[in-house]
Length: 147
Image (cartoon, rainbow, N blue to C red; front, side):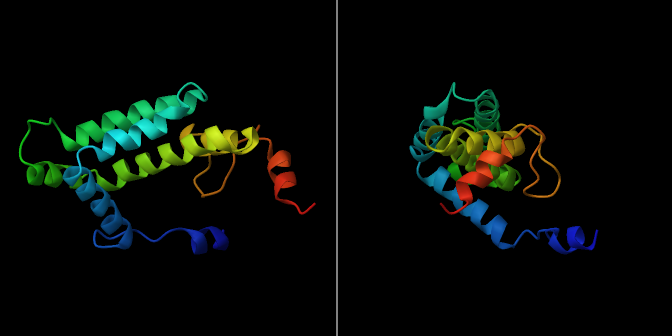
């Protein structure tokens, strides 16, 4: 139990580095309107390879559109203000989408499956790094051991 408390992340403050990074990403999305569609197209190169990733991509796209509102829903500054409320979640979802997409396309299947199960499938624990039952941990460990 003491290890869990020691390793538990501190509650974030709005001015913390995570929120600053999230706001920077959102500002870039607002300023560079072609950036988000290009980013999502890169993530969607893995569509069809993992059902959990497909579902996450649908949710991430919908949440991003919801956070930014309608294209005609105000000035870029107004859209940015509206998006700030959802900044951390939107940016986290986008980051997970890219990570999973890259793993599904380029990593060994055991690694990609473990990531998608733990981070996208809702099967991971509350402590970062907890893998769900059924993950091929042996293949992941064997891959990491020196030859």
